[in-house]
Image (cartoon, rainbow, N blue to C red; front, side, top):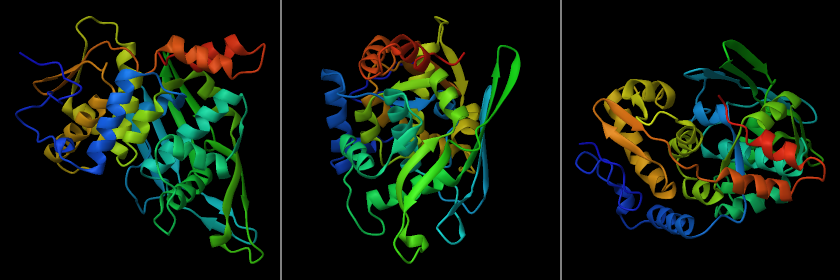
Length: 338
């Protein structure tokens, strides 16, 4: 008999996977703290992510490639590395990767929807966002804020094309990247190192599609997973997918399909399964309403409550929206991707 998972003990793969999150470590403590807070109270704020990017994420590891593509079912994302002008020259940036650009996209998407604007201040507001997620802004070349800054700039330079099959039609959204315009401060020398993000403007097409395809997320969960891009991808995928299941029998997803969606970086299926299961155990702790089973050859997904109840999301979003746009903001931003 397959077992439903226990969000607090991780009893999903009890005989096949060592649950390293049970060990005493800063990661374990952060995960358990977030799990308890999520179980006992609502979040003080709500974050949002594009539904397509909940299904097909950007690169998780640094790569020398200049083009990245990921597909899942009826959606596909193509990401191309780009350039930014530093005041004198065009400077090439790598493809954005890891947790930082994912968090930067969540930050930008949430800010845009809450304030009904495509223009987003970075600077100090990005620090506030990191603080809300429980991420310190330590300095140095490998400091969290420095890396967030660098990945935000790589994200601003990148071009993104979204493909969606919807209602029997193939839809291509050429956003030219999530970011249409990017402003940075520089010192008098005008060198690349002097650039510091100041403001960005989301492209109109990306913003419009975000209004239609936004998924509400719990910032406490994002903070708990801020060290694992795979865990963040699994969390956002389940947040988008589980609440849309209508079949009482659930939806079966084989490991081969999961690898195609999440495991392009893994050469062997066995290596991917091990990494996925360990990341999933952490996700299940901070998404306690997720219902799924470990069955032969894959996972069986069951209809579940979303991490953020949609009526709660609508109320919070409406409270921060300009008068006259409340209904449109709540309904548009929370419309599920069919």
